[in-house]
Amino acid sequence: MPLNLLLTVQQVYDELGLTRPNSVIGNSDQQVRQMLAFTNKVGRDLVRDFEWRRIIRENIFETTASRGGTALVSSANTLTGFSSASSLAATGDVVTGSGIPQWAEVTVVTETQLTLNVRCTGSASATTSCTFARQYYDLPADFDRQVSRTQWDRSDHRIMYGQKSPQLWQWLKGGIVTSAPYYRYRLRGNRMQISPVPGSRLVLANEYISSRWISSSTAADPTLSTYAADTDLSVFLDDVMVNGIKFHFLKAKGLEFAVELGEFNRSLSYAKGQDTPAENLSLAPEPADILIGQINIPDSNIAL
Image 1 (spheres, one colour):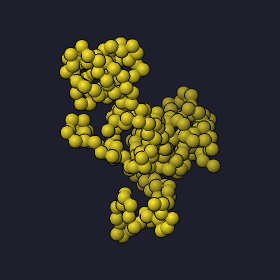
Image 2 (image 1 turned 30 degrees about the vertical axis):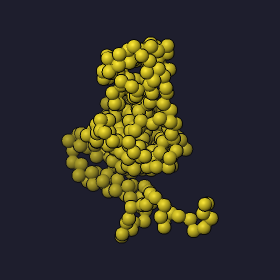
Image 3 (image 1 turned 60 degrees about the vertical axis):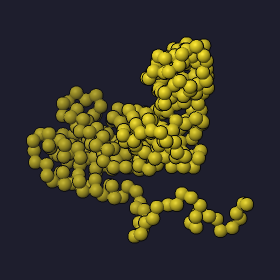
Image 4 (image 1 turned 30 degrees about the horizontal axis):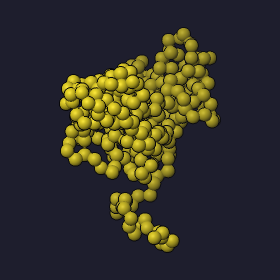
């Protein structure tokens, strides 16, 4: 059974020859508080260090179908004539229509007016059909980073290409020919931006590394990124945590820490090597054929 926070800190104290505390969370002793800070630091550093299987999560979400409406397009950067603009568009949505520049985005929404990030070329005297599509989708609250090459469009059974650079993204927004059957994406802030902007409902999925590495029981998934109780459990191996805490403690005190650092690196190396089974590697790898070919066509029962 893994050590909880209190047992982990007590193990560190025992190995350093110090008097063990009876509690950690809420303890006013400055050294115990320092040990708690090092324990949280070691855990956060481990999250960033490796794609641990216990903190890999799957994110499945649906895109929003585009909405259609009519508006008066003026030569300013506003669309007017709405009775309920908030039901058609939200901040960040992309608007298309006659007199509206390419990749115009909504910046302000009121019930009767939408403000865009660019000026339009209309006269505000004729009603124009507009389409509003959502390009931004929120990342999970515990998102730390994405697992590479896991972003898929499950509706069309196609991989999505990303992370795209700012230079390429500006080409996608301003180039002459930028549409393709495959969606591209980039992470911007705490959201995912998709191009071309989906016009229909799609099911998209990817895997990511969670920032949460602490659970309240052995059977529970991690729900915390900082210890909240003495009984909380880390997803990382006990010896990795203990050795890491000892190293940081001795370093902070200005004491010799070479042996403890070596023990930490060795236990970390073991933990990484044993965390997940290794896949079979080919001496002559070839990229998978995304079209029908000899490796993916059925041997029989082909529907004609």
